Image (tube, rainbow, N blue to C red; front, side, top):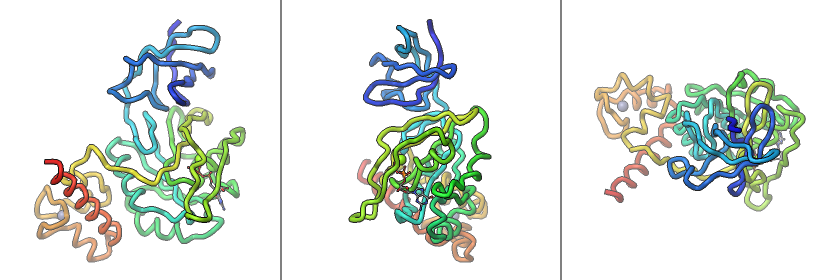
Length: 289
Ligand SMILES: Nc1nc2c(ncn2[C@@H]2O[C@H](COP(=O)(O)OP(=O)(O)OP(=O)(O)O)[C@@H](O)[C@H]2O)c(=O)[nH]1
Ligand SMILES: [Mg+2]
Ligand SMILES: [Zn+2]
C-alpha cells in the first residue's frame, strides 16, 4: 500500500514519516536522493508500507523550498531566535534573512530570554525593525503567545539560530507535551553546547513546528555579489532612488541607500555588514574565475 506523508525526523539514513497521525520508520533507496541531496526533515514523500509501522520511501514530492542552515524543507515561517546570551551574532542573522528571502520564507525575529535583559531586544529593533516582525518572548516564563499567530493551519514553522538561544525551550513551552532536551552555555566559551543534534518536526494543532540544531556558521552560497542587494530587504524599497537600477550600494555615485544610511533611515551597522558581505562574495568570485 502506498501512502503519502511528511518526514518528521531523519537520523543516519532512517526516516520517521508521519501520515494520518501515525509514524512509520522508513528507509530510502540510494537512487532517491533528491537532486543529489539527502531527503530532509519537512520533505513530503510517498512511501510503501512493508509491515506494521515500517516502510520504504518511493518518491520525494517536489520541494517548495529548502534551508541549509538549519536543514529543513518546505518551510513557511522561520523563527530566527536571538537572546541576550549567548551574545547575538548579527552576521548570522543577516545571512539567515537572506536565505529566507531567497527561498520565499517568512522570517520572524524572535528575541527570547526577555526575563534576563532587554539589551538584545534593543539591538535587534535598531537593526531589523524595517525587515521582519520582531517578537519578544521568554520560554522560561512560558511567555510565548506572540508566536502563536504565525502557526496557521497546514504551515511548517522552524526555529533557527545559535546554540543555546532557547529554540528547544520555546518548542517545549509551546507544546507542553514535548519534553525535548535543553542544554546550557559553556562557562569557558560563552557559547551553547549544541544540545539538539537532529532537526525534528512536531505537530502543533494543524501545523508543524521544527526544532533544529544550533549553528554558528552560515555560508551564503548560490548568490552572486551583485545579487546580494535583492535579498537585503530593507534596502530594496529605498533602492529605487538610486541613479543606477543595478546599483550595488557600494562604489556607485548617487546611491539612495548610502543617503539613507547618512540620514539615519537605514541602520549604519546593518549597512556596514552588507558591504562586508558584498566584499567577501566579490573576493570569492575573484578567486574562482
Ligand atoms: N533565562 C532564560 N533562560 C532560557 C530561556 N529559554 C531558554 N533558556 C535557557 O537557555 C539554555 C539553552 O536552551 P535550549 O532550549 O537548549 O537552547 P537551543 O537553542 O535549543 O540550543 P541547541 O539545541 O544547542 O541549539 C537552557 O539552559 C535554557 O534553560 C528564557 O526564556 N529565559
Ligand atoms: Mg535545542
Ligand atoms: Zn544604491
